[in-house]
Length: 51
Image (tube, rainbow, N blue to C red; front, side, top):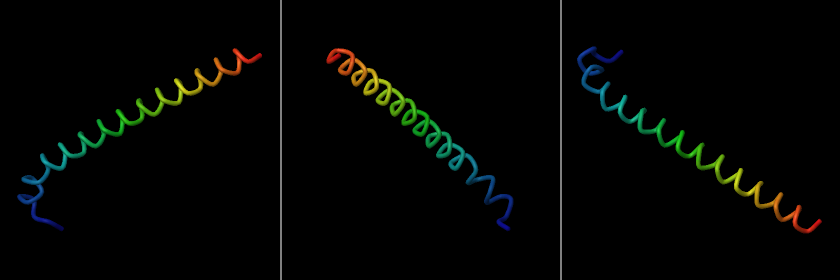
């Protein structure tokens, strides 16, 4: 068990890092979804154009 004072001083930086990581994760997820949707839309358009 770490001392309470040690945890108190480290908590803000850990919280900030966690928030940043969550933001990056959400941004990456949205980017991935956008890419997948764009690719699927392009593929469907190509298939529709050929038929």
